[in-house]
Amino acid sequence: MDLNGKSVAVIGAGRSGLSATRLLTELGAKVFVSETDKNIDADELKTIGVPFETGGHSEKVNGNDLMVVSPGVPQDSDVVTRAKSAGIPVVSEIELASWFTATPIAAVTGSNGKTTTTSILAEMCRQAGLTTYESGNIGTPFSKVVLENLGSEPENAVHVLEVSSFQMEQIHHFKPDVAILLNLSPDHLDRYGIMDKYVAAKLRIVENMTNKDHVVYNRDDKLLSKTLKTEAKMVPFSTGSGGGIRFNLNETKIYNESHEPFIYLDEISLPGNHNVANFLAAATAAEIIDVDEAAIKQVMKTFSGVPHRLEKLNTLDGITFYNDSKATNIESVKVALQSFNVPVVLILGGRDKGGDFNELTPYLADGVKLVITLGEAAERIEKTLSNHPPFLRADSMASAVSLAFQNSEAGDVILLSPGCTSFDMFDNFEQRGDTFREEVMRL
Image 1: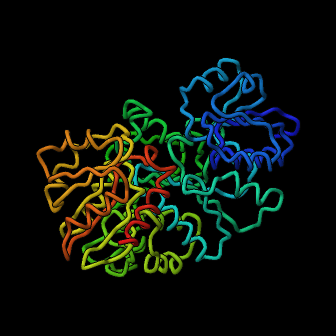
Image 2: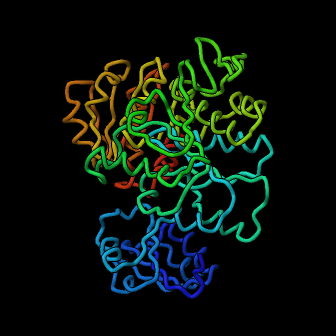
């Protein structure tokens, strides 16, 4: 794809938009950046040397040869629909980046566990000696990595991407060599309206795959197993046993495809059945990429987790604090609560994504002694769950941490697992988690 001299509108000036702009500029494109938010990194755009606008999308975004949209720009937004009506190709940042790399791609998606599984798989590849590029929704834009290796991609390398439904809304040719689909549960219904549209966006990851490619999928997820259709070779994983899977489990250990003992469950570094599933998904994909068993086993024993995902922060006066800021949907909160068998004070809330908080009822009844509500969703949470553990409302993260600590005792866990996005009070879930950490350390 030759973009030299082509006019390109980049919609959105966050991490993805800025990285796409740098890549496009290096390729010789004439870039114009448009952002609705007035509070952006204007100095960075000036350094890149491209014209830009803030506070809305003017006519300057029309009439270009290409439009690149950031993940936060919905597919039904006016700026996108106008461009498509005018015949302007509209692509996502991962689509753009994929045009300029020949390195094999392993892409991870699902409603929950994406970041952990992506990081596990990337570490397995590194342990096996592969040059491994970890990017996508995990924090580093794909286009940034592609730019850094433009024209000089090493052999024996692999891209390991975390891919969200938002990033796949505007793909055309993007195709992983190995796709890993973890699970499907209600999420982002504030954007998609109905579950079917969310599922359709998720499953776009396989639409360009061929019979030379592999799809690793969770056989235990009934919705995923029912809806997944692809020409690629389908390779299931499961936390149970049975034919067709590369790793089988019993109560104490995991067996490899030859039915030889592979690793004892109590040797696995991260607790919880959900993490066993994440490890099995990564291990299955790693075998397809020709990672040796020794590297897979080593990572299973030593991987320490990712920031903001059930991250243990501190123990003070016998009370232990966990940062699960990345839990932005109801299913993630369920997983977090299932990880503890001691009393929990839960900090819950943020910007509502349309999830059903009623689904938390049995999980709150089983060990949650108090819920601290926070953010725009606080009132809805309290009304929905009014017959369950007592609630206290906080107006800031500092207040939430203070209230939680005042109402806890030795042996309790204080858990930030919001079940909502962070955008009502913070720039992203990382900033929310970092703020939680700072407030805990101030106690």
